[in-house]
Amino acid sequence: MSLYDKFSRLASEREQFCTSGINPFGTCIDDVYSATEGRIGNQKVILAGTNNYLGLTFNTQAIADGQMALATQGTGTTGSRMANGSYKSHIALEQEIADFFNRPTAIVFSTGYTANLGIISALAGHGSVVLLDADSHASIYDACTLGGAEIIRFRHNDAKDLERRMIRLGDRARDAIIIVEGIYSMLGDVAPLAEIVDIKRRLGGYLIVDEAHSFGVMGATGRGLAEEVGVEQDVDIIVGTFSKSLASIGGFAVGSKAMDVLHYASRPFIFTASPSPSCIASVRSSLKTIAEQPELRQKLWDNSHRLYGGLDKLGYKLGSHISPVVPVIIGHKEDGLRIWRELIELGVYVNLILPPAAPAGITLLRCSVNAAHSEEQIDAIIHAFATLKNNTQ
Ligand code: PMP
Picture 1 (cartoon, rainbow, N blue to C red):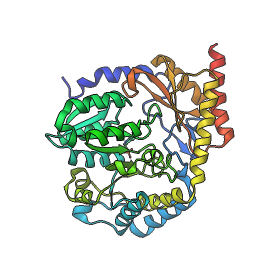
Picture 2: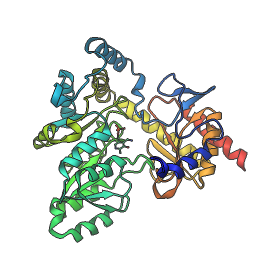
Picture 3: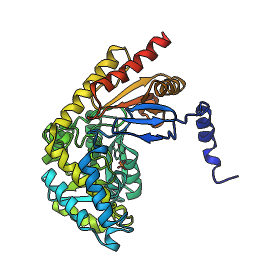
Picture 4: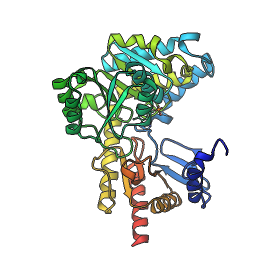
């Protein structure tokens, strides 16, 4: 009996897939040349499997600001903000995020994962009820477990199911916490936020929206789905990440003045090191870029429509929504692995998502576009999928 016996089935299943020398569960990107190009082994690839939605990972100003912070403030903070102190730039970024969202308070976390963990576990303790979309990100589930709240799952994007479960709660619905996401990371679909807000208005409760994939992507100014739908006033807390459209690492939450207390009461905020100065500097830079260059968002959506339209025309089964996440739904795991590998040989890198990571037990090739992709690159991705289709017919 070893410590790892419980993983033996998982380990052997993974090994079966790794016969080709390319490991889909630990892909090494040997070189990254730009926001859209890299190298895997000897193959130059178009990167179509990132969350770099606005293509800002190589933004000249963000790099210059990050380098300056690295040179002047060092490589890391080496501790938590409560114990070791905040750098001025952490506090400045919190003010800038709060201003961006027109909210009184923002809290910066070390990742998006700890942002969810920090907010939800602190607010939803023993005795609390949380109503979760069944396809919620693991960080949301883990946060509920950490806090000790009672979890009630409702069917993915099914507002009617949420309403039924709220009604069943009776008086407890008034204090329940509803959590949904803006864009869902696997299928690229969006929460029915107007209907959910309507339920909250009628039955009570609090609403948290995780805009990890929709921040910078949706809304007139990039504030996300709540801005796009016009219901920001009804959302109590918005959670987000720096690791997607902001092209760095870290996380945040914005909310009311009262939320400020979580700086002193949230364990995942208190007991981990704060983001390094270079991350904070590049995030501040990219936040400005998001505010000043709405054309990036337009380019992202143009690219999304181009890829979705092209793959749809080829007859691939896609998700129900057009968004920067374009999932190609494949029947069997084995087909998924083969196509994924062949795409790399054709110079296109996408994400292979196998159950249970993909919802409803499906296998999918998760393609994602960003604002830095050229039309030629999008067409090259479509062409690679067309080649595979022709080869298998
Ligand atoms: N929430 C959602 C919806 C996510 O998809 C992710 C990451 N994929 C996170 C939170 C966690 O963000 P991070 O990678 O910054 O920890």
